[in-house]
Image 1 (cartoon, helix red, strand yellow):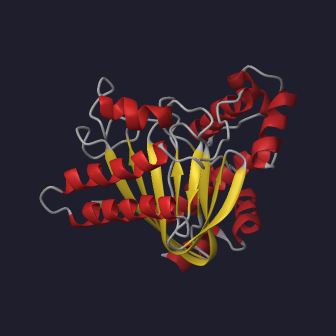
Image 2: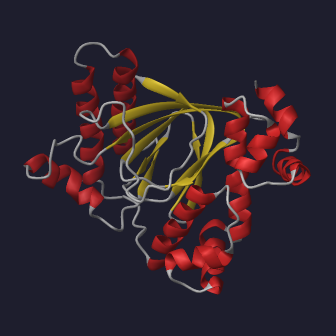
Length: 296
């Protein structure tokens, strides 16, 4: 089954376990649809699962490991395990699909040749953070074809679809494991590991008052170094990141709950209603009430 998703509430789980519907089948498929004026992005996040993403219509911005690109309809992206990344709308409308799967999903375990030959070379390669996939490159087009077949299998759910999913994802992964032009960008630098610890803390405590000192303590660094990490990776200060994440959560709550705007503001760390309204207007160009009405 392909689940609908507009945004994602990032949990503070250090292991980043993806909650699959069936723990005996650790693979989940999502369809994300964005329109200008509504929710338009997923926040920065990371997870233990590997991920394939495919843009079916419109354009999406994909950022990871210091890289940023516009992914056109028909193209896609592969994200390795534990890599910090984000997606956002580019243009008026966008539809994309994501498949997240455990590293043992293809092989069933780690003590076999399938894992050692096709999975391990990717998940243990600290210089392979991800790969943009373009249809005008044959090998990458073959990856995309297999991804699309996997999504079709997930959507139809006819008898044996689990085998089709595993086969097509496995074929896509096998092509990548032998890809001579894979992006060689390291993603386990000390700075990246520190930012993941600080981001985790923000995602788990966004409703609380968070100081730069709190963030620095999570990563065991100075406040100045914490500032440098956020500026280097996100091109914004820690306080800007905190505010952006709070407002992204507020967007989701406005559309997916019946809670009052006052309650949502307080849940997201805005204890003064006027401060929440002002921050939301600067972020979205309209009030929380107007945003809810326009996208209800």
